[in-house]
Amino acid sequence: MLKSGIVLINNPIYRLGQWRSLPTAGFFFLFFIYQMKRGDLMANTMYRGQQGKEAILGQYEDYLQRLNIDISRTYVDTSFGKTHILEIGPRDAKPIIVLQGGNCINPMTLSWFKPLFSSYRLIAPDTIGHPGFSDETRMSAKDGSFAQWIVDLQNHYGIRSCAFIGASYGGGIILILAAHLPERIACAVLVAPAGIRMGSKWTMIKRVLIPLLVYKATSSAAALQRIADELSFGHMDEIDKQIIGDIFTHVRLEQDMPESVSEAALRDYTAPTLLLTGSRDIFFPGEEVVQRARQIIPNLDAKVYYESGHFPSPVAKEMMNVDIRVFLNEKY
Image 1 (cartoon, rainbow, N blue to C red):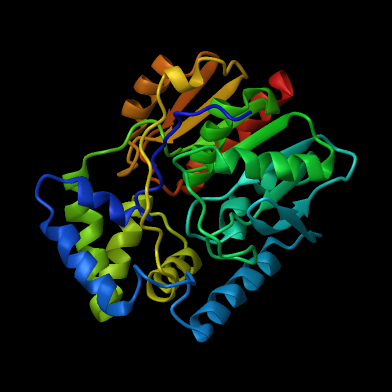
Image 2 (image 1 turned 45 degrees about the vertical axis):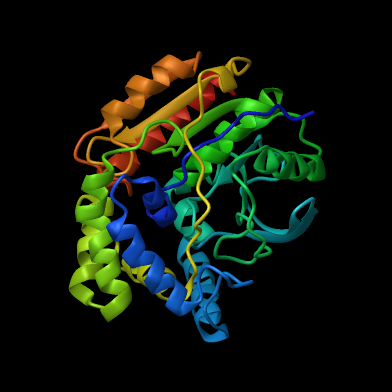
């Protein structure tokens, strides 16, 4: 049985609907009207058109080619629809389920962990309801749905418990699983995760939401560059910038967003957990996230990478993979 009472935050890059909770909702109202004009709040598909869908799936394929490694692909039937999965690494190696950031493409997040490809069997599903090849069904993050989804995937592979790595929204999914079915987690790595502590809403409005509204209305290259710089503290790859721009243009962003996980929800979670954050993360500020995580996650090791944003800098990626490898060697 899944436990009740678990809620978490989504990645604010995709959490535009969260602004409805602000005391002064002017900016969200502007976004709401704009989305209603585009049909975003009533559509049955996440994409605004077939051409845009094909463009994003084409970028997905291009990104896989850039990884330059053998990749197996499969589809798994779950309680919530078909899930497309990428598998990388030796088949007889220990499995790690890698969960992508929300409303981006799976290979983008997977590329952050390339140094692990030769040592582990990475199982990386396209999150249902987000851009990729899985079904477009939107799942609730307010209950145990994502926990059941993960268990369906584990059961397909005959995995009772394994390691997890989750970035941003993917980290939030791990926290849902930790709250509902903690025994399915052998150890976990949370990279700039949702669901622990969110940064200043007003800062996000000024530095991300307003440029996003400008970009969605005008396709301004300057507005997209500003968003990319805010997300990555000036370190975003050109290809990633273009992909998030296309996602803003062609994808109906997730609107139904959850809240933070509570200490009570994680009372039975004891698996070793590594938390990796960036000091310049505008969404989940590193020091604040670590401070709260120490209060709610019992078996925690945490690090803050300085001068790194929500998208990790090249230096942060190098340090991150060293820290992850040491953690996995000790705990898995």
